[in-house]
Amino acid sequence: MSVKKYPQAADTQPVRVLTPYTAVVCESLAMMTADQGSTFEDPTELITTNPTEVTHQTTGSSMTSSSSRGFGFYLQYAVIVIGVIGTTANGLVLYAMVASKQHKKHVLIFNQNLLDFVSCLFLVATYTFRLCSVYLDGTLGYWLCITLWGEGCSWAPYLGSLINLAAVTIERYLKVVHRAWAKQKLSKSIIHSAAAFAWIGGIVTVVGVTIPTTDVVGGVCYTMVFFKSQAGRMVYGIWQFLSFYAIILLICIFCYGRILTTVRPQCRWIKRRSSRDKQDGGRCHQNDDACQHIIHHIMGTCECSLPYLVH
Image (cartoon, rainbow, N blue to C red; front, side, top):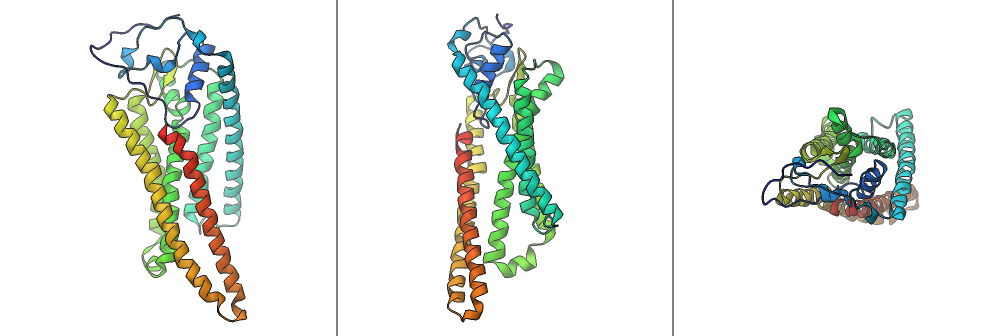
């Protein structure tokens, strides 16, 4: 089986780019093309700087082993299970916060769980859609490629959750380290604006990058692939790493480091007071433990995000 041959521009080298926000996309593409009867050696070998520059390919699917396809197939089921667990867990947290009316008091925390809930929900929808082996064609196929197959609907809230995580960190830093200033200047409108910016920032980033670099070729979705040049691809990769990993990590390290250096001396001072203040000392110790737990959680999140952003 061969793909329709389009005119190829002179002196143009193919640009091979893998999707940066999924660990199994290449394996999934290989599996999908195999299920559809395609005979491509490697889906990324079809990629050029323009979707009309798809080169002619012949048989060669034997290069992909059946065991590798099987592993990718079951890995997608594992992702679905993880997505269902994440959706359920975040849904329970959202329900508990609404039932206790804490969602109005802790707006950014509620927004964080809401972003994670939406991201996990669309992650399940995305990998369920991929397992259905749908042949993409026409305008509908193009938009399904962008929203579901290309993980646009799950990637946008994921990036939004990273932005919101930085907002939560800055909010806690201001309330602890600069308490007097925060009481006067940190109004509810600023908090709600930060929550809205997290959604807008994630959606704008995904729409602005995915639509120009995504297309459907031969019924197969290729997302984040058709960059105009190799330099453009590199600039985007560096910008994404700095914006959604390095800067956020530095914000978390600085803010929670300052929080700990502020809280611990206060706790030591309280512990020196009379026994009637034992309750305050216990509360201080709990706050210290909570800060350390949050730091460990952030470090774990950054460690999990690094392979996707670097890839």
